[in-house]
Length: 417
Ligand SMILES: Cc1cc2nc3c(=O)[nH]c(=O)nc-3n(C[C@H](O)[C@H](O)[C@H](O)COP(=O)(O)OP(=O)(O)OC[C@H]3O[C@@H](n4cnc5c(N)ncnc54)[C@H](O)[C@@H]3O)c2cc1C
Image (cartoon, rainbow, N blue to C red; front, side):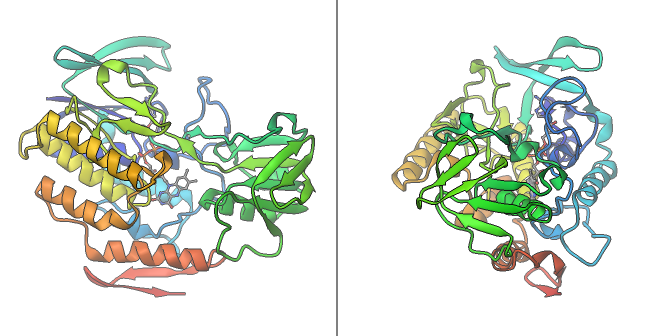
C-alpha cells in the first residue's frame, strides 16, 4: 500500500515512523530542505528562495514552552544539553532530526517538493506536486494520504477599525524574528496568548515602551514593569491607538499576535472535506480521519495537548486501520459522530477557534484513541506534567524556564530550580 505524507515536521515524522513500522510504502513530500517543520528557524521573515511564503513562525530567541519530556516521541529520549528543561529551538530541531535518523526516515523524504493539490480519483488519491528546484509539476498516485502540513503558518489578522491608516510598521507574529528593529520604539503587541507574551517580553528588552492589548482576558502573569497591559484596541488613527477604556497611546510599531488559520488550500473539493465556520474541517472523525474517504487523515490539528504524542497516536491508529489491524466504524457512523460532536460543541458555545482544543478532555481523548488503536495510552506522568507545567508557567512567566524537571516513574516527576 502506497501512502503519501505531506510535511516532515513533528506530525510528518511521527506518521512516517508508523507507516514504515507497518511496512507501508511511504513517500514524504516536504516543501523545504530539511526535516523539522516549524522548528527549522529561518531569518527570512516573509518569503523563501522560491518566493513562497516562509513556513516557520519561529523567532530567534524561541525556547520551548513545554518541558522536553512533552516534546519527546516514543523511542527517543529528549535530553537537554543544559540544566533547563526548556531549551532553545536549535535543540528541538536537533532532537527531531535525531529521531528521523534513528528511524531512517530521511530516505523517504522528497525535499523541496511542494504539494499543490490533493484530489480523489475513483480508487486512489492524486497529488499534484511541484518540484521547486526544477520548477516542474507532476502527478503522483497513492492509496492513502496523511496530511501533516502544520497549523502555524497562515496568519490570522484581526479587523480593527482604522488599521489601514496606521503610519508605522505593522506585522503578524509569524513574520517576527528579532527585537533589534524595535530598539527605542513605542510598540503595541495585540493579543494575550503565549506568542504575545513571548514577543512582548523579547521586545521589551530594547523598546522605549511596550503595550500589550488583550481582547477577552488580561494575562494573569507578571510581565515586568516595561510592559503596560491595555484592553482591546477600539480605533487606530495614524499613529494613535485608542483603547476601549478611553485611553490613547502614540505608537511606532504593531505586532499582531492574533493566531493562525489552518491552511487547507491543498484539499480539492473531491476529497470530501469542507472548511466550515472559518476553522472546522467537516467531517473529520475524532478530529483527524476523513469520515467520507477514510484513507485520508489530517494530523496536528488538536490544540492544548501534547502535540508529538498525539500525532504519534493518531498515526498509529490510522496506519493500523489501513492495514486492517483495527476496524473503524462505517463511513456513515463516522460522519454521524462528527455531526454529534459538532452539535454538542456548538450547543456548549465552543467557537470554531476552540473546536480542536482538547483542554480538560485530553486524557479521556488519549485513552479513547489508544483503545481504538489497541495500544497503551500515554503514561499518567505526562498528563500530570503537562497540567503542572502550564499552571507553573502562568504564574511564573519570567522564571519558569529555570526549572529542571525529571521524570521519576510512570506516575511522578520532580522539579528543581
Ligand atoms: C513560536 C512557536 C513556539 C512553539 N512552541 C511549542 C512548544 O514549546 N511545545 C509544543 O509542543 N509545541 C510548540 N509549538 C507548536 C509546534 O507547531 C508543534 O510543536 C509542532 O512543531 C507542529 O508540528 P507539525 O508537524 O504539525 O507542523 P509543522 O512543524 O508546521 O510542519 C509542517 C511541515 O509541512 C510542510 N508543508 C506544509 N505544506 C506543505 C505542502 N503543501 N507541501 C509540502 N510540504 C508542506 C512544511 O514545510 C513543514 O515542514 C510552537 C509553535 C510556534 C510557532
